[in-house]
Every structure is written in structure tokens, then in C-alpha cells.
Image (cartoon, rainbow, N blue to C red; front, top):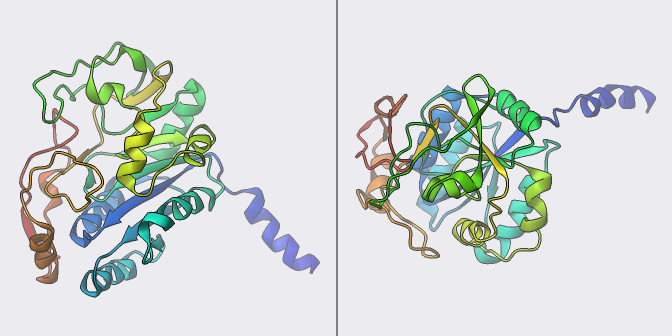
Length: 289
């Protein structure tokens, strides 16, 4: 028994608490979750554990997810069951607490990473500044609010590290600069959000963000890179809990048909994109997987 203890103890001792987990929410969108995972592979470094909390509506889509699971076996895949409105909350809390990492990033399956993110660097900036959040979708290039005529004005800031800046959340003039509680790739310290997540009512990603956004405290600080590192591609909507604006470019059925035909999104069109809005209206093109 002593030898076994000596073998296991170093793994516990050196677990990387000062790191971040990534939790991705996905529903019936294998083509989009695959695109997100591809972009993460290319641009994101020093992540701790990645979990995908997903649900499907039929056997064909389940088989598509099973195929993606085989491509990404190191990911922690968590499937919702027959009562998703009941199991979402406990499964999410389980994902958050299943690793010793102090920080967490949430993402949805129509997000795409377009530029480099070093999670270790971001956690260090959070530790230095004691900021509430680190936005990956914001930067000096973000000057337009999706589906609105009101301009977004990047707020005054102070430098924390090279290419990383801090601002007072109340100084954000509108929209995304004043929206710290979101699921679009923003970094949080688990200890600061868990008290809300364990007491607030929600049953899906959209009800989680909708209810959580109403509890935002703007008397705190947010971080961002000088240029945004990801964006959302709202080409369709599959959930019915929240009316979110989207382009309606393709139906879920059409996108699934593309996937069955062996196609994927051509992400080269989006890498290093100089977008002015966190939500990009550009129509995707498809190439063979």
C-alpha cells in the first residue's frame, strides 16, 4: 500500500489548480461543435479539463456525436438524458467541480476561436488584477453591438500584461462591454460564480445565462486582449427557451445533412478575422472533412 501511495501522491500534489477548465454546451449541432473543437485545437493552449455537456434529439445525431467523441477521446463528454430540464443543473455543477482547477470558461457550440489564447497567461492576469472576468470576445476591434444601431465604445483601461487590459465594468457604455455574465468564452474564478450557480434556478444554457446576466455586479473589473480572440456564428437556433437573434442562414436539418455528406466548415475564412462585432454574420462555406 505504501508504494501505491507514493505513486499517487505526486499526481495530487502537482495538480494544476491555477488553471482553467472549459465547459462547452451543445445541442443537436455536430457540425458546429466540431468546428469549435477544431478552432480550440489550433489556438488555445494550457487548458486543464475540457467537458462537453450535450444533448441530442434522435439516434442519427447521437451517432454523429459518437463519431466526434472518437476524434476527441481526451474530452470529458457528458450526455444529458431523457429529462434534460431536470439533469442540466446537476450535470453542470458536476462538470465544474470534477477537476481541481480554480478557473472555468464556458462556451456554446456556435463559438469559434480565431486567435491565440494562452490560458496560463490569462489566469495569471486574473490573479494579478483580481478581476471578475476575462472576456475573449472583446477587444479594441469590437465597436458594433449585434442587431443594434448603438455603437460600442471600448472603455478606458489600464495595462495588466502585454496585450492584456483591465477596465471598470461600469465604464462600458453599452451591450457586450456591460455584460459580464455570459457563456461565450469568458474566464471566471469558480469560487466567485459557484455561490450563484448553486442557488439560482435554471434548466438549460439559455435560462442559465438569462437569469445569471440579471445578477451581474458592474462594480468590478473585467480583462480583455487588445484584439478579440473568438466570436459567435449565429447561423441557426435550436433551443426554444430564449429568443436570441440569429441569421437563420441554414436550418439545423441542412447543417446535419452537410455533416452526413462528409463536410465541415472552412475555418480558414475566420482565422484572425478583424470583426467589429462579437457575433459575425458571415455565411460559412463547407469543405470535405
